[in-house]
Image 1: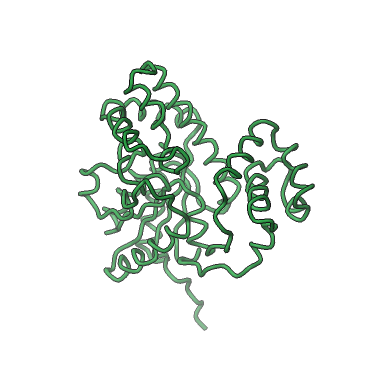
Image 2: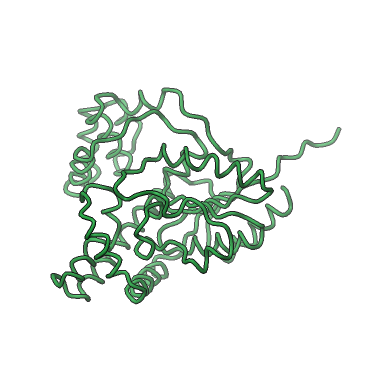
Amino acid sequence: MSEKRAAPARAVLIAGPTASGKSALALDLAEALDGVVINADSMQIYDGLRILTARPSPAEEARAPHRLYGHVDPAHAFSVAEWLADVGPVLEETRDAGRVPIVVGGTGLYFEGLLEGLAPVPEIAEEVRAHWRARADAVGAEALHRDLERLDPVMAERLRPSDTQRITRALEVIASTGRSLADWQAAPHSPALLTREETVRIVLEPERAVLHERIARRFRLMIAEGAIEEAAAFAARGLSPRLPACRAIGVAALAQVAAGRLPLQDGMTRGIVETRQYAKRQSTWFRGRMGEWLRGEAADLHAATIAVIAGGA
């Protein structure tokens, strides 16, 4: 009796903190595998922020098909559910064309939705989100966990007192909906769009010092490419600062630089520091929620991914 062979991997998922080299790896793999690069970054979806969100350049987009970049008006607060609704047909079209979907980005919830479906948790009010995140910054994880014990003992029992991100999320849900996150998670999920068996899943994980140097170099390059002018044009739209797009790193600081209210060096420093802090939060999320994904630098994962996809194993 012959041994049953696993179905071949048919898609590549690339996660990692900002400036880790995700987009470059995705493009290299798209050229090698006849693939389509599909965006899974919650800021790169917005129009008008190509430079500040480090979207692929027009020259890079000409090398391979790119989908779901800059397709959302920044006046709209785009949700995970909307991204899943958009990405489903793109995955189907890519496969129907005989090409490999290469989903790349730094938004962990997008990948989680792809592989697990989406729990029917409603949108959290922005003021609730801001309150609990500010409290997390002010008091730390252990005090935050005591808040959760008081408001939602079921979730407090499930979560480590050191897991700031998940504790904050649980507090946001109970405060905004009056129901425990455990109740929402127990409800039927929307169907997953991909399975783990049909994907190669990788997380780029450069050393911290290397990543910090890349972040600084990339932010200086953004300035040279017109990030200040882009920030000024974006600010001129007069959008609500509570919109997600308005929280893109560098927008507020460089708009102040453009208006003469902040020295250029101060604006650059602020942008670099905020980017490092964001990268740290991303890395923490990936370690906590993507523990079984392959990890490493782009060069090593490039060869391994091609071997799996091309080998059909």
